[in-house]
Length: 415
View 1: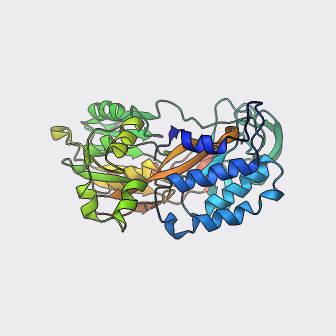
View 2: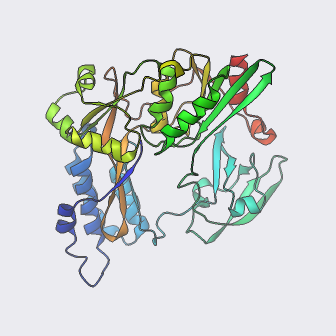
View 3: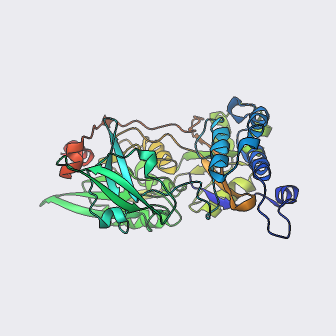
């Protein structure tokens, strides 16, 4: 779910900033490592760390620190340590001036038959300027396309006719932050008395609830609606506002439970715990969501809205895919309760949690899951993927021709 910027805390800073003295010397890797381990230890939402002995993990990776000599090695070491917990939404990001994590070339891919096929190109990238096209096959190894922002690399592609070429492309940071607003809609008339609405949402960020109201007001008379969240990387619980138009009367939709509540609970979460947590309505911004959980000792259940006669009861198709993640998966799980909804596409990313960003010494940043997500029936939705009702297989020929098999299937279902 939506990441929210937070400081690691005054106590942590005081305890770990000793070596970063007034002369602005860079902190040692040991200092950053200790800050990383302690931030996870203090803030990871599950007091049991999903069964992992976090102290033992820290000791094991700390012993490897003497072999670390640069940011890239340090990032790899810490990333491997964080991976031991086995969850999404947990990673470390180097300082902006570091060359540890390379930028890409402004291209997104769809994996088809083990090959990386270009699916989207950033508007201001060299890739767009030099004629890389959707449907091109990446010949260069995927991990070899990364490099420091602004520097160039030679990347090989094969186009849809089988012609191969090598292009010198500048490394750019693209696709994040996402475009704003990442919410658009339109109405297509298919005949004198038939129309279908289309809503594409690439993020459920602050402001998405108001956009959902506007979209549904304009599409209320459509004979069917297609909701496209295939490229949706997440956001926050503003997704509940759109889902409310399809799921019926107000009801518990999702609970966020943090460490203080789970530690006091001392057992697994049940449906009774979700029903008994503080009811929260209309919390559709990052600040409102985090404040609600904090105000109620780490536990809050968020309810959908009763939209009354604005409820949409005609057919709905939800398009999902491998890039549908986090809050978008939460949206999909809630939409499973909509009686007229059908799901088309591919399995979602399986990356559903609520995380926060923490500042570390030396300009490093750490993302940590600080809240788990449970359904109204007590189901733990941690990293739980959503499967489509109608799985669609893409081919490279589809990419090269511009055909969209997911849309084609959606339209066939709505005939």
